Length: 83
Length: 155
Image 1 (tube, rainbow over the protein chains, first blue to last red):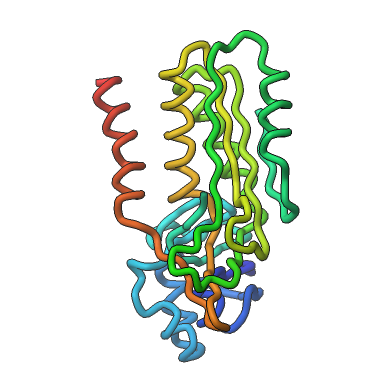
Image 2 (cartoon, each protein chain N blue to C red; image 1 turned 180 degrees about the horizontal axis):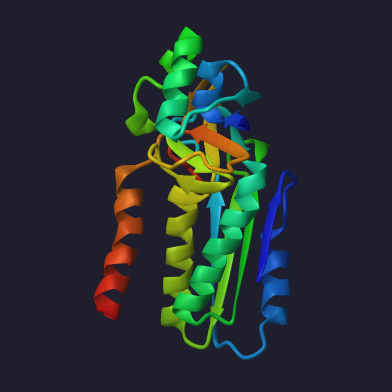
């Protein structure tokens, strides 16, 4: 499965990129994160405290247990500060 | 209903005037305007980042929810992104309802959703150093209170 992974705010800064295309068989978001961490230490820094990171799956808020079935885009970012 | 996400500045007075003109039967219009604060006096500028593909979907959803829950006649949201100087206007909302209670409550609800669920992130830059604005715990509590209110209202 090929998915677009997007990063925003300090997650983007710590990962060192705003987006990338990833080929993965991870069944859930949590396993996708584990896979990323195993690829490069920068992800380990970015995903050190998952309680500070939110997830959107195909532009809708999800969580780390959300399954990656027929998913095109995943985004990781800190809690939002709009308004 | 209108949702605008834009980089360029806008004229609040003009937007309120346009909104008022379009509203036909409401007796109450509530507006809120968010401005870049400079509490320390040292802020040079603020950078607002957003998730373009998600922002419009999220703002439309919150606005529809507010209209539905508070029986608003209409609602408007304008939110900027990009680089803003202190005292520049970041965003505004307007709600219109037959009576003031629903217009106020709809505006408060919409702001609580925007604060904690709209995909925007603010970075304050002072003396060349950037610092991401952290969410305030009470904003999340405030958003949760609507869920409690609605749960108790609907049983």
